[in-house]
Length: 178
Image (cartoon, rainbow, N blue to C red):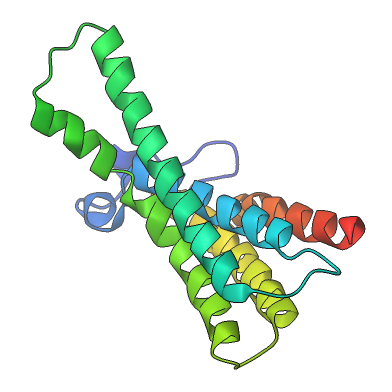
């Protein structure tokens, strides 16, 4: 059993456990980045004193995620080009398309805002639900990543709590700014 400071090395874990259930590092990075992006945007777009427009907010969250994922993917293309890698055009397109987890991570926030458009709840409630959902999801991603790296449950929960702090900081900032 791994301790806090020394996670289990992949070769000491049961064969197949990590490869079958381990999301690539890049997917974890993009997913967490997308959750933080969605939280920050939904908090910023929910301006006090303005007319609520959750549909427009949902569109902005989605468009910003698409633009961010394209920019991040294109940055990889430029980095490859600068390193002298003469990769084919299809591999460059794959680099841009590999950013899909960032866009996928904002979709629950978009859906929550669209539920406000449908009248299921007020925009302020949708913002609160989205921030709470994203904060819990940050905990889940962090804990899952640590478990997949071979950490024990306690260490994994601590890792998830550290990721969750980002979401909590956005919630606190949102409360203080308003």
